[in-house]
Image 1 (cartoon, rainbow, N blue to C red):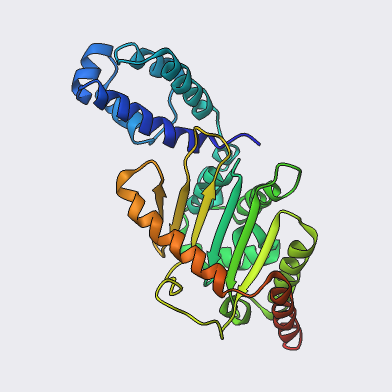
Image 2: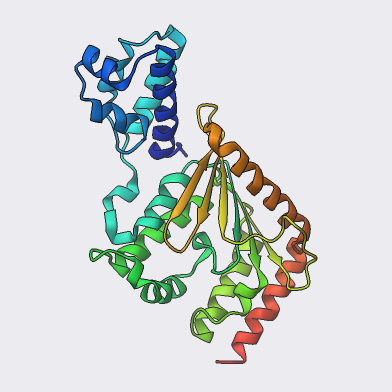
Length: 295
């Protein structure tokens, strides 16, 4: 599966910024020389919008670019210009789900820690529908539950097929015990996770149990997801969930390296503390049976 246009756009933004700075040009200088609006150049360097590869070609003509650099940048420009399927859903699917879809496509591996909710890539239709109602205040007026559910199924399709990413998720045991949907929906949801763990070779589910020994790193305070890509042009990304918005940290950003190291340490400690896949299936089965008795 091809890497997401959004990921290519992030890398392109970094590359264009580096090339301009290496050439010793300010944004105004490059705008004047290329006759391309300063605002458009700024949008390219901050990955705010898709850009026509021809615009990149015009900018490169005014930068000190070697032949191999030119080819590499134009490849990124071509990849970033492709529309993502999630753009058809716009605000109807919810901006945070669209953001996740824009990153995870084409990932080689995805590691996620979920301390509060069922992971979106493994949510059932019924569970997602319940949460859409519960979280409606966070969505725009154009939000459509039906379109959101359609988009979620399209997102989840990345876990099937020969090129599926390796998806490892660690779920806090509190997620299994907390009634975040009616008991019958919770039972169905946990059974679905068990089935995914047993039947999808790309999926590994582990539970962080209540009795897990914790230390300095294992006190993860929020959900986070790490993405890695095969394409040498791509970058490693960590996305951190908050109640308000999702924060993105990139391996190409110097200022993000310390933050990425924190989450790398957290992921390592969580892997150490979590139950094995087989033990996790047992814990999931216990939780599913507990909700079955409440129906």
